[in-house]
Image 1 (cartoon, rainbow, N blue to C red):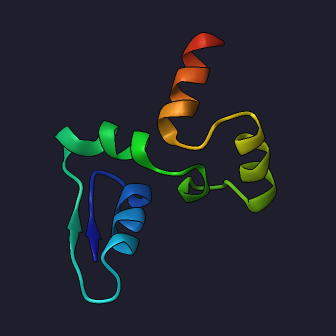
Image 2 (image 1 turned 180 degrees about the vertical axis):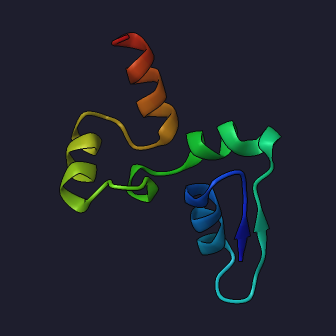
Length: 72
C-alpha cells in the first residue's frame, strides 16, 4: 500500500514494498523521491519515450528537472 500527496506518488509508493509492505511519501520527501525515480516510473512514460530520454542522458527525475530548468 502506498500513501502520499497525490495518486501518482501513492501508486509509485505502493510498488516499492510489494507485496505486503507499506510506503509513505510525506510532503517533505516528495521532491527528493521524484528526483530519484527512473524515467520509466513516471506516468505516461512508455518504453519508446523512456529509451529516447536515456539516449539524451535523462535517466532520473533529477536529470529531467535539470534539463527543464536549462530550457525554460
